[in-house]
Picture 1 (tube, rainbow, N blue to C red):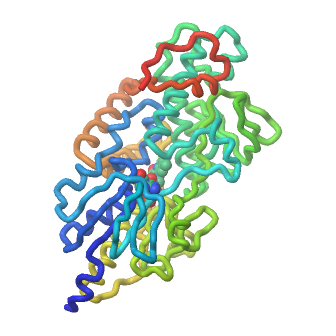
Picture 2 (picture 1 turned 135 degrees about the vertical axis):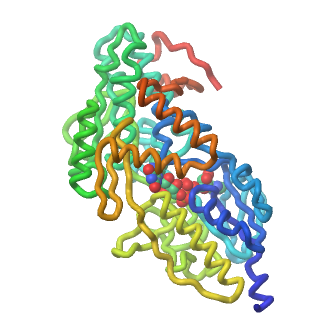
Picture 3 (picture 1 turned 60 degrees about the horizontal axis):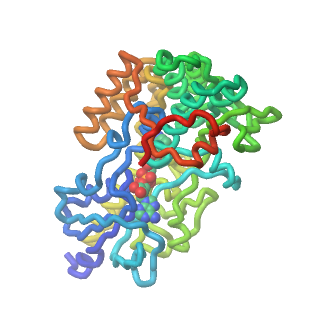
Length: 439
Ligand SMILES: Cc1cc2nc3c(=O)[nH]c(=O)nc-3n(C[C@H](O)[C@H](O)[C@H](O)COP(=O)(O)OP(=O)(O)OC[C@H]3O[C@@H](n4cnc5c(N)ncnc54)[C@H](O)[C@@H]3O)c2cc1C
């Protein structure tokens, strides 16, 4: 084995402890590398269940695990908590909070954020769902809407408070709409005295002619029917042209509401800018077939921050299995390089797509298998519990789901950290500000 090749890429820096970054780090566990994983959060987040935190079904700690404890047993890996702001590709250094962290090979796995298609002002009125903070903020807003409605004398304002508009009929929008409907029409029904939470109006707005476009049309239709059965009003072929503090403009109709949820688009992290690399319209770095950045063979980009074509020639979707497989693939490339070998191009193995609609219905598309309804939900539940990191999380989530399946209860209905801006956003905040715990 060539000594130079062996030591050439010894220091591996990974930016991002999400699905892509963590799977790369773990796949290098037994290899003679010095791995440094940098993340601005001290936890790995299981984003597919964020909507359950936003709708009071689970607590933040149920779906997050400290990165340090995930990598505790991995002696060749260290973790740095820092926000990366740049990459010096000439000196092979990552820039994070005034530090410069040198690398021989770099894996960038910094994910994506929601995007507003050039309407950034909408962010204030239509918060999205990407982080724990986003989820607890949305949870606060949704629960506060019910509290405010309970104390509201004006019927018109009560109607606005009990109207929830979800923009975007992708998996996040569908999951949020279903979960808010179940919260209003099942979990909260006995808790209020002045309002009937069942009267809440939940509207899901989608510009395309069906929800869940990554699925086959028949499954989209099944998901739409399930949503309507839960009491969600599904508006297809309806583009949103404005969001403000009073509501949403959908086509030629203005829907008055105090709670808007954004689930309509994402933008990659700014890694493309840090690397001076070519990106697509969503800011994703156009990587080569080995996931390295053209012109920078020791820099790889994986997951939601990268774009690469699948077998059908279309860009791979921004989902967790793509990020995980890409992280594992780059680990294989680095291991092979140590002994001067090369690896085949990256190929994504698609094991299927799943999305849930409420607490006992889902749609599943796996190879030739198509499932809807309860059986699909059982599969969805097992898949999500299986992929959660940590025994405690798996156990707690499974128990929570079983409990809420039997009782309809939502155990995580805490309103915390209410700010003046929240109350402002809720419209008339002069009356009956609910008693809340802050911090
Ligand atoms: C609400 C929601 C629901 C979803 N549902 C599903 C689903 O059901 N099934 C599915 O397969 N996929 C789902 N996804 C998509 C899936 O979560 C992503 O495709 C996946 O997380 C991408 O992995 P990643 O490693 O590229 O990025 P991420 O998992 O987002 O990880 C990025 C990491 O980088 C860190 N980071 C970012 N910027 C910096 C910086 N500047 N400095 C330091 N650290 C930084 C972040 O803290 C984070 O830990 C969902 C996503 C969301 C938001």
